[in-house]
Length: 425
Ligand code: IMO
Ligand code: MG
Image (tube, rainbow, N blue to C red):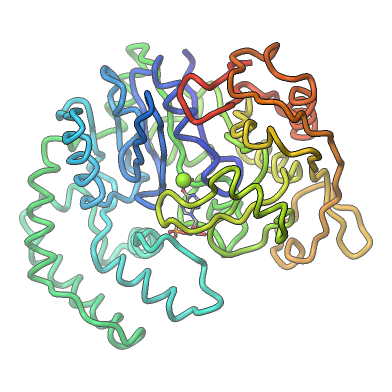
């Protein structure tokens, strides 16, 4: 199997985990390269639901090595609670099956407090973050003064440095946000505990990954969030704080672009978004409500109701461009099985002009009108389909039209949440 990056081509929650889990059967190594516990990656195997925030979904596969690489912001609390939950369910992950980069930055309790406080202060202008401390941790990484990498948790000066950091963050919490200060001693003792548990998993993951590739190992990169949440290419400022796009797989792992063969953009057969920001094809009516209920579109991390809308090919083309997509994984086709008539957004209209390319300016995006093409629904179940010939012709016509409008072939179609409910095209 060639080296593949699987990433979100929309606003997150596209079903990346389901596709990674499906492909992980052939993978020796699965790598998370950006984001943190803001991800909510749901996998259903033999009827059992697993939700991962911090761990790569490859942990469910015996014989697959999982890597949390340098570009991730690591939340030790989330990581260990997932490992503990897995071991309760009978899967014990040993060092050697999971590697954590010594260069990954660490999410501290004050990052979460700052995330919450900042969102509260922004009020109606809030980003709608997951409150997992993602933005404040990446901010400290770029800022460089009070950041902690995994290697710093294992160093002798941890206590002194952490005490100084908590003091400094408390000043901000009190003076800027009028929030409660945090207790340095509690954070220090908790962090020392995590550091000891982390120690056997820590390594230079860039070195490990490149050696694994030299040995011919099959590698999968598991993206979190989605292209439209990318800090550079997304709907800024309503984005996350990392590069969710294909380039992030390289900077976030220390594996060069020449070693990657395929980039799979996971995209729902419609669109959803959680959190605030523009969404041109959003359905603020019964149709949107119906898709939400059919798809049970509620967040895996925060439980929030997801905003729902029609598939937007303008976005799919932009995603194909910035990621260099080699294929699409089209998910949740089955959710549309009972919808009589579907719409595909092919372009936008803005101030009397037709825009065929996704506008970078959110002010333009906010005031765009989607241009739709109507397509007949197939009104037949698709969940039992295991090859394209099993799909109703009208469902296949919808899939083909998406490929055409996106300029990207469809490589996989998901017709249900279970691992088996997948078609390789
Ligand atoms: P997965 O990996 C959907 C959204 C938040 C908010 C914005 C910034 O499951 O697809 P952050 O906490 O990252 O600072 O929030 O990004 N967001 C997601 N939306 N799926 C996710 O992850 C997301 N992770 C963050 O709702 O709008
Ligand atoms: Mg999710």
